[in-house]
Length: 116
Image (cartoon, rainbow, N blue to C red; front, top):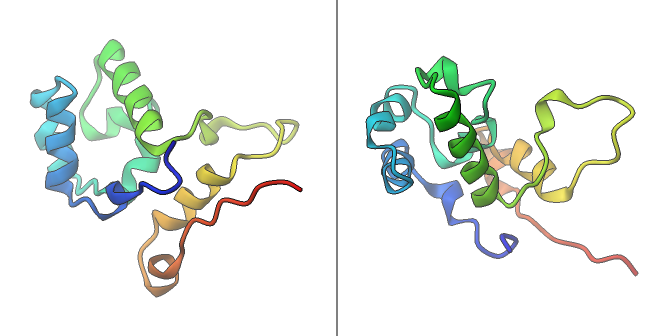
């Protein structure tokens, strides 16, 4: 899966826009570049956030959100969680911390630990 392959975290907003184009959505490249969505900011790209970028076609939003989650290696959508939900997966938590800027976020690395 993703654990050893996180080069998307280094993507510029132009890299992200080019990736969006490869998904079949060249019309949205400018939405990502104008809003400076880098690889680190992809964790926030979901059906709630996409309209803020100017993407309002619901089917397109569903596809883009699913492909972002696939790229990031996360299966959950962390923005509408209930306190009663089960614990979060490690990669989702890591990517939320890594999405920030600064020395502390830059120094974070993902260390997948296995039980036992």
